[in-house]
Image 1: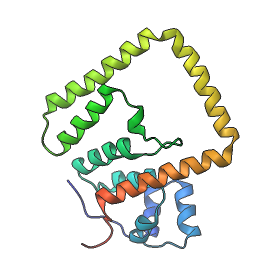
Image 2: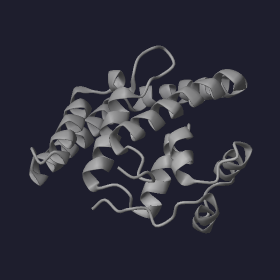
Image 3: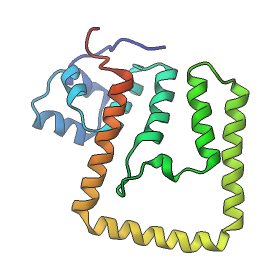
Image 4: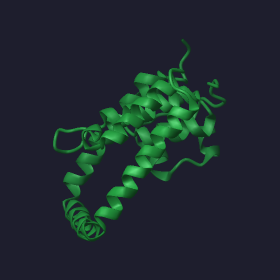
Length: 178
């Protein structure tokens, strides 16, 4: 069930022990009220951490945010995370959205989840040797991305800002009246 915030100021937030980078960002931007922080925040992960810490969102809202993030989060080449999903994974996201709206049962949600797990297991067993090559390629890609810190930081900032906007689109600002 959605709760009203029990805290409203950054000073009160400190008691929850948020990450140092979040506190640094708040200080650098002169933000003292959480309503302002929420409107200006560029990190969806920080927003979701606060929602969880204060139980601000309903189960439905949290599910809808998770599904929206999967559907809408951009990746560097113009595609979205959704574009990388298998048919089973897309179906599972769709069922989760229906579940959040009360249009799917616990059993349908469990079946969709099991189908994703089964497809993942089949793919892993068929591609055991390819997986080693893929892991090596992924490690090389990560190393290359981190070598280009500016590009990696810019890509992360874009993704995180997009996720923050998605959280605001679904949750509004729980620290503001109305």
